[in-house]
Length: 495
Image (tube, rainbow, N blue to C red; front, side):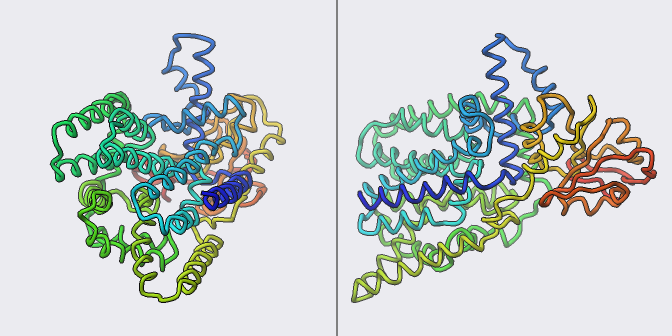
């Protein structure tokens, strides 16, 4: 226990340091921050006036800050972040506090899970493999939904085992945890399906079934209201569109989730994890090992055959919590083969060292893990010094909500509309577009602005990777920007 506490404290101090240094740079993270800001304003409005006109608040917010996804993402994590905003203000550390806490709780309950249901001999190694995974480290310092899902997967599995293996009644608690997990991200239904199939295959008695009926009822009651909101708000349609539109089934879908661990873990550990499936079948009679195999199968079948979404490494975080257990099965076999214990310890130290070093070189979503500052925060502060005229607006020429997040913090609230050229508006005259929207500042990431040749007529200021232009409407030439028809959701107009 002392070893665990020492590792735990050192690791999460390091985690907090990364959180304090890195800018918000991922578009999904910024989107969740903007949702949290909206919920913060909504909570403040509720405290002043009740009832409130929710539609008018949404319309006003979106007209100034076009980065709102409240009908697409379940609200729980963003509401927790909103609570932290009310307590500590809006900044990058506060934005990530909920994820930091979920990461801490994930490690604590993973320790409890493997201590109670799996061999204790390699538990400290499993903990180190978990927390030194580059993706776990990155996502623990980023306001994304994967770490909360990792937490709810681990804690729900822990209480599922306590209920249905140790025959303690945690059915109500389990239903609450599954429901809250769903309010983080809808993919929590995969874990519920695994529990359901597990019980069906194990054919437990009536008491067993009645307990899970209570779990299912509570899970349904908690998750149903947001399903209704998604259905009527358009979120469900968006999920179905992204799931099936223009995504053809290919042979690559079969092996994606088998080679993706090689990017989540150091390759040798990933290989050990895949070997772990072989050693897993020898223990299949034990329910805790049978569950792991079943979880992987249910996850693989659902995401490969039913939800053919664009594959990404973040999606693999849903089976991330159990992979160190698979790795430990292979390590256990290696330990038996090596005659001297110090040889095994040396191998483990070297592998963990290599996994730690890999963190320094890993690229996630086209960004180096330790490329902490891209210039967004500084660029937004530069805008405030330009003394914008009243009701002048800012045009963002990329689809990311990142700069909306920083501009919200720097500019006086609801003082200037931010315009995102997201949905193509058949813009045939860029000058008229700027005049119509009273655009005084144009800004965006350098790698996106290269496609806009019209910008060469403006004076440019570069801050980090962000370019800032002040419009000069008298000298701006007419240019055809968009020819023909534009599809909805194109990121940019095509020339």
